[in-house]
Image 1 (cartoon, rainbow, N blue to C red):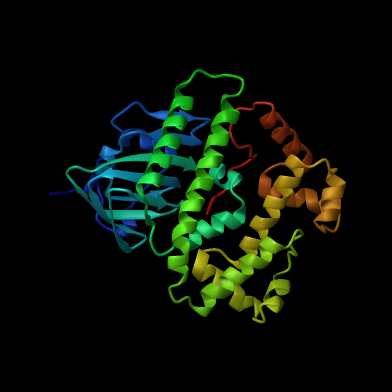
Image 2: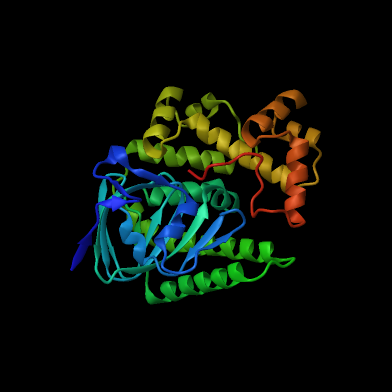
Length: 328
């Protein structure tokens, strides 16, 4: 037997234009047990997502990972029809639109919700691209009993740590668990990826993958688009169009994201001076580098390094940004 709901948050939502955008804090109303949050809503663990059936048309603003324990669900994700049942994982990336949800009456599920910035900070951008690429056509992955038990162990460990009283190392423990959980998830995706990659890929899709591989393989990322288009023997406009159609971002957007990740890594985890980082990443001068960091990280290189230092010594969040970053 199926249940079909047409309302969420008191609104009748029947078309894609009227979806309800929800952030990680809104997940409180979708659980039958005590809401559990951590570090300014960076991590939310839900033990019983039965009230998920309240959803009809939403756009999630975070990484939502749902493991179905029992029952079935049929839905549309980004206009594509999808069905899932017991032992299926539904992975909704930030900005995923879900609508026309149809649930069996016995539907139960657990969930892990991660803010965009915490997921983005704990995964290399190339891993983020892999997730986006392999889940592009379908956000649903079937897992075996062993993987299900592994997920439940992580879920239980995270829930246990989140409800504990604050301690000196609580933040580090939860951060390590989230990091390990994400790589476990990547491993599961990798197991099914050969099946998905074996499907016929368009030339544009292959070129996009080659572009990301170029960005990943360079320790210092050239920031000129022409460098990559020449390597791929295509025009800069065609490369940007390919990136836009396959990821929703332009080639310059991807170059910037990889560059910012390198800046974050070097400011946070190296002994290099800011002047040395500027020269290593081939910025023309310190003034330009400072403005670039300010534009993309929200503060100066010196301020950012100080904030990251506070984080290492137990700051107020799992991730430290002067402004919000994006996972997608």
